[in-house]
Image 1 (cartoon, rainbow, N blue to C red):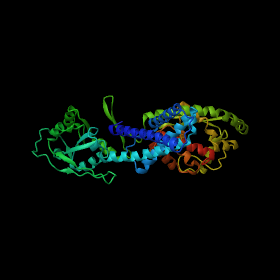
Image 2: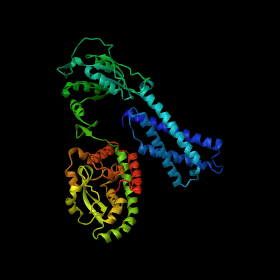
Image 3: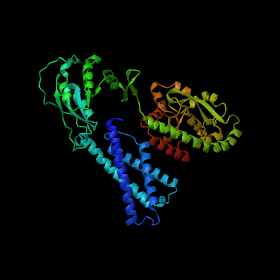
Image 4: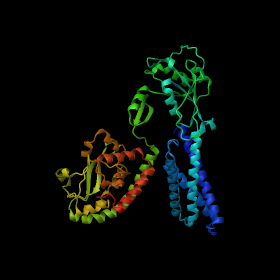
Length: 507
């Protein structure tokens, strides 16, 4: 987690927990002394447990489901929606805790509801002003916390580059050195013996004003030097970091600068021309550079997910699959009788599917078709109503009468809890294709397999029987991958319950 993200995380944590304490205290006082909704038999011990539970719920929600999105990139609506969602989640967990410990205070509905509304109000208002403060003058108000930054670049790159750096409210750009005098035929080469003889200039780079709040004016960044004197400036000026964005083509062109700055203890950020060109052509902007086996390598990824949240997702999968298996066993046993009477044969259907990034595994289902279903599929391909690489048709004659019922109720999917327990699948993910479907994929289609496939997913809760275009399925799956979070999984699971109960989109 970088400095900006870490600072934002703890500032948001602080104002949220203070808001929770204030809302809980005010709600209790109003309920007891003004509304008289607190029972006289309630003990101090009960209220201490009440407070411990609500703060435990807050910590659990915050550290498991908090998404660290740059506060500047969130719109006002997204900020409010995110705040309300998080606050409601805290109180849902809190109510579950009260029920779990069988606290009588769960009946103090006025206290709980008023606390929730006050909590939402306080966090919404405080986060609004936090955003204004951070984006409007954090580095000026907190010079000791800000990172002092210098920039080495050229005139043609300066405005856009510095404007982009200003998007990070945790840094304070103190000056820029325009090193065009070291550029010849579009190539930068550092010459430590270069003497231009110019004085320090008062010219300023006029940056684009991208800050949202109208009362904030982006200050212009002064040009400190245009020649060898930039080294003196860096040595004598308090700088934590230096960003270098120059049109060099060989490491030797900038090696001496980087080495000298490193020797001063300054953190150096250096552009890599090859990556500049690749990023300009790439659809995605997720890139990370690390050293592997002594070699600096750049990692490109369409979507980057937090490893801690992925570990929590797997933990939830294991617990959920165990619960699902326990619930499923009696349902499968009851379903097996009419299913096998109508269509003798194996109870379970096993088929090879393609999982995460092309891994093969066997998916398990209750058999809802006649034994010769796969052989008859070739004869029915002309009636496929899907546009693309999936097969689906109305009134499929291969499905048994009992099969239609268990499909409508999604009972045929229950054995997949074993797939989840094994790790082949997740509770929530993308639909795993058959091997034959996968072999017809274009390169871009494989991205929908970059996460572990799931029993349910975005496609399943979006009215699957109404989606006949495979490209729409891919779009929904990629949308899930790009926006994945634990909260999104919970939303999909809740929608799945609704779909099962209403049979919406089922066939």
